Length: 196
Image (cartoon, rainbow, N blue to C red; front, side):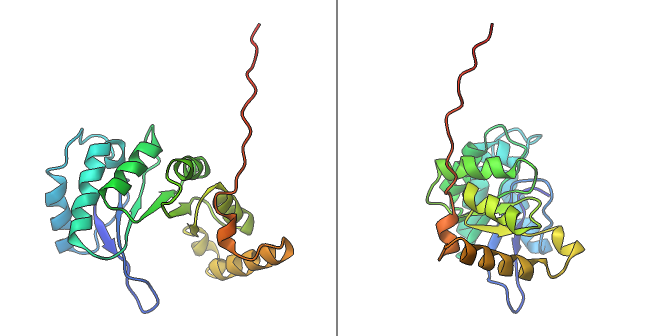
């Protein structure tokens, strides 16, 4: 159900509120679902489109959740938008403290686009992360951190391995802080093609 809230919990988890602007979020409790659903009913825009495709709706939803909690607020954006930067700006304007992008093959591009537009907003990169090379790609594109999902099912120790591999990579390349990698992608303008 789009627009629901979740709080992660557990003995080792930081407490935070999270909302997903996509289509795959499960409410954490009937009460949280009811609160968010009642707010969602007043959100403007075409209900047939994902919330993140409707910037005003996303801003209103994030603002409603922001007003309901003092916890850090992470907003996961959907890849099903034509302009991820507009969705990201709406989420930040609504009160998101961190953006979580995207969990598909277009994730790297979207992380890069949002980093260029919102250089001071923390970004979690998501999407097929299984190797240290994947971690590095997301960091260099502009993510501040990564989330590992499906790879945990194949290898429950993947996160520990990725941390160790990243530490070794940084030592070999003289990088003293992982944070120094974030957003270091350098691009060149594309040459204009002459068509005959």
